[in-house]
Length: 228
Image 1 (cartoon, rainbow, N blue to C red):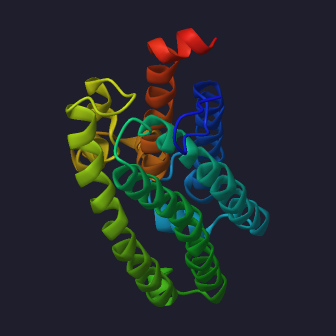
Image 2: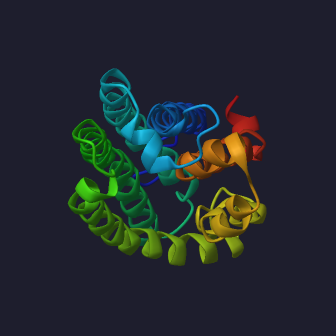
């Protein structure tokens, strides 16, 4: 246990918190696939419209479970930034926590989109005719999340680059902003099932990559070796 200042998270605990983030990403990725995956069909909205009621409900439950796991995993970021100034540490921790909570909220919003699309098919109309409001509400939520996401990125990258954290500099390449900006390039070159799998679950795959990298970085640090 770290005893100086208000630092109370050990590196071993931080690594287990990273495992929570990895589990959260896998759970919500599964939730994505419950919405989107439908064999050879690549139209995501059409796939949601044809998803069973059980799959839609299960996907909503995944959002709740993943939100718990993701929010718990925010503690790993707090530990990673413990060498930094207190205000920097708290800004990164709180904004990252806000993003993690938003993942569950935004995903749960897709339940309304999927339900509307399913109702449209049952009524014999195109899914797009009934999903407009649900999609607009979901997009509004996303735009709000861009604020803490931007603040997190602006603070995270310089601190890691200047070696004021427990993270090595290479963690910058696994910061969520990097794969986020590359989504169009990566998904745009995919086709068929793999496009649905990667494109449909892309945002959670970003966090899977981040938490795996973050946990690996902390496992390999000297501080962890001393605590072990």
